[in-house]
Image (tube, rainbow, N blue to C red; front, side, top):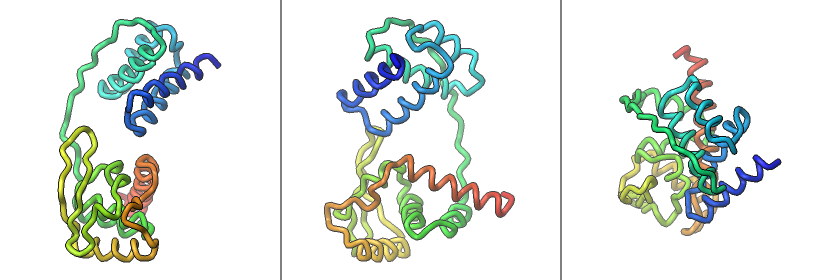
Length: 204
């Protein structure tokens, strides 16, 4: 259909302009959501749908940003609405509860979540890590930061490092191999599945 073709053009425009793959995927998801509920070639229709949608201003802002890319890629003029995002302190789980989730995960996911816990990584930052980024003797990790942040050097806990050494050996990974060659969205979804299962089991 024409709408799907234009969404593809928008995502191709992002690819050509060096947007991160995770950003392209998120934009595609939001544009498809808009396309199900309004006419993407009618800016006023889109603005009306977003305005009446029962959701946070932060999500409305993300829909508007996705549509702005659609308009730019397809030469559509519009007056972009402004939604003020109200930041609030996120609810941080205790390390004890994080460890319950890790203990209930598969061996591979348990290692991935342990590294994230130790280093405070975003999922996408974990998927970028290669064997050569980790000193397997000291546990020092050189992290390539996302969101235009400065790269940083951090240290794994002793137990996590031991798990990682075993993992690298069993997988026969070379220095230039990624530790977790998966999409960050897949990693996040795996985490949510285990988290929800533990939550249901403990009634917490």
